Amino acid sequence: MEKSPTKLSYFDDMRALTSSATILSISQEDSGRRAVILDSTIFYPQGGGQPSDTGFISNSTSDFKFVVQDVRLKDGVVWHYGILECLEEACESKFKEGQEVSLHVDAERRDFNSRLHSAGHLLDVCMRKLGLSHLEPGKGYHFPDGPFVEYKGVIPQDQIQIKQKELEAEVNALISNGGKVLVSILPYDDAAKLCGGDLPSYIAEGSTPRIVKLGDNPGCPCGGTHVTDIADIRSLKVSHIRTKKGITKVFYNIDP
Image (cartoon, rainbow, N blue to C red):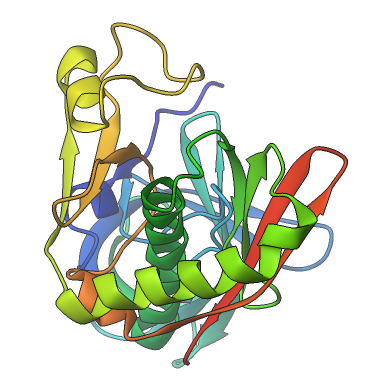
């Protein structure tokens, strides 16, 4: 039976750390973990180079605590994977489809992942500011173990160290100045205008993409979570830049 798409409540408010929802489905994996589908969720599912949220799901009387260890999006449906902790006897009977539950996202993890992801977008902005617009943005990896942004194209070897220092200085100047981060779901033409005149080829014409705009800089399409203000990133270190086989990777870190 085809499952209905999950309402992505973090699209509406990516600062929300608690909310309510209804359990639509519970299944058991061979590993012993359970998979829970809700009608809506504030848990960010892994994707776009950003790790998923973790946290827990409970009911109003706290009979059970479902510890969310991983979250994935498949064909519009969000799957919450984890283990059930029974706080009272017979809690299994209350952990069921149709149950109204409370969602609780791990605030520290959400904050760090949002800062790390936002820093990757800010690097894109500064690459253009430094005259490196010939490099076409590719994928990003915004996990704590070696985050980077990737570009198609190269920086001459004799320019790498110079650009690394300039890039780090430019990014930290923007962080120091700050600026509100705005998120909007817009008609295609309006989104293109906000992103500097065009959108990546993977965004279908006529669609309504979600656009993230950091301060006064051009926006970009993104489905992830982000900081409220650029200043929230706090500081960034460009650890190194590597150019190989026509691909440039800029590796970076932020303070925990």
